[in-house]
Image (cartoon, rainbow, N blue to C red; front, top):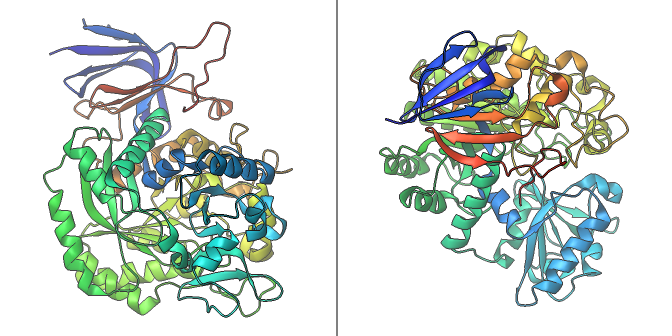
Length: 557
C-alpha cells in the first residue's frame, strides 16, 4: 500500500482551528493527522506544502455545472462586465460560425445596460440573419434579437405566460428580454445538443470546479425544465465511463406544471443510482420564485415604488405544503429556491407541514439563496432544522446590486439583506453554494465576501464605487471558521457525505485541497491559488508550474 505525506503546511481542522502539521494518505484515506512536533513516518512520497494550507475538499451546495460548461463551449460572457465587450464577443462568434442556425450562449449582467436590461435592437445591429438567444448570468432570463421574437411569434399582443414576463418598451412592444417562464417561448429555436456535447460540457465544468478545489457538489437542476438541458444523461455517461471524478448530488427538477403524480418518476430515477459511488439522486429541487432584480421574487410587501407588485410566486403555500409532505414521506431531501421573503416563508411553512405530518425523518431539507428573510422567520430555520444555503458572493455593494436591486427593496428591507450572521446567531446551519455560473465557483472568494461583506479585486464582476470599501451590512458578516465550514463540513452534511468527507480526520476519504498560502490572513482569500486537488487520494487537478519571475496565478483555459 503506497502512502503520501503532505508535510510543512497548515492544516484546517474545522471550527476555525488551524494547526501547523502534516497529513498522511494511503489507499485513498487519511491515515494520520500529525502535529508539527510529531515525527513523519516513512512514505513513498513526501509533498512539501511550502507553508500553504491543506483543507478537506470544498463542496458546493448549489451549482449548475452543465449550464456553465455549455457557456465554456460557446458564447461565454462571464469573463467580462462591459456592454461593448458583450457585443464584440457575440459578433465575433457569429462571424466565425456562419453554419449555425442560431447563436446561443450567455452570462450577461443587466447593470451594464441603460434601464437594467438589454434590447433586441442592440443585437440586431450585429446579428440580423439568425435568432440570437443569450441567457442572463443568473439564468432567470434571456436576451433575444428581433429575428428570435418574430420566429417565436412574440409581439405586442402576446400575453405574459404563467410564471413569466415579457419585457416591453413604452409602446408595449417586446423589447428583447424574456423572464422566467417566458423563456420557454423561444425554446423551440434553440439547438438541441446531443449527449456527446453535454458530456463534454460537463467535463469542462468538472475541470473548472476541481481547479478551485471543489471535490463534490449538489447540482441544483437535473431533469426536464426551463432552465437548460437535462444533465442526467451526461452524468450517467461520465459515471459509467469512469470520467466522473467528483461526488455529485443531483437535485431532480420538480415540474411546477405537474403534481404529485411525478413522484413515482423521481423515485425511479433515484433507484437507478443507488449502486453508484459517485452519483446520488435523492434530492428534489423546488423553485418557489425568481429574483429581485427582475421583479420576479416573491415578496411579502410590494417592491419599492411598485405598490401593486409583489413579484411572482411560482408555488403557493398550499401546494408547497402538499408536495413537501409527499416528498418527505418518500425520504427525499427538498432543495428549495427562495429569494424573496415570501418565498422563504413558504419554504419554511412547507417543511413545518412535512414535520407535522411525518415527524422528523432526517431528510436534511434546505432553502437556497435567501436574499431577504423576514426577521420573524429567522429563528424558524433552527426550530425546523432547515439549513440555510447561502450564496455568499452576492453579499456586497456591487453595481448590479446597488443600481438594480436595492432600489426595489427600499431601506427597511435592505436591513434584512442576506442575513447570514442573524441566521447563524439564531442557531441555523449555514452551507455555501455558488450558483455557478451565476457567480464564480471559487469558494475562497465567497468566504472572503461572507466574512467582510465586500468584493474581491480578482472578480471581474465586483464593480462599483463601494464594492471594496463599504460593507453590505457589516453586522451580517460571519467569522472565518463558520464561512469555511459552510463549504466543508456543513456542505458535506447537506450533501449526505459527512460520514466520509468534509473534515481532516483519520479514516476519512482523502478528498483534499492544497492552497498556496496561509488562509488565516484575510488578505489571502482573493489571490489564493489551488496548487492541488485530490479525490480519494488521487490528484484530479494540479496547478501549472509557475514561470520564472512570474506570480503563481492560474487561469482556467
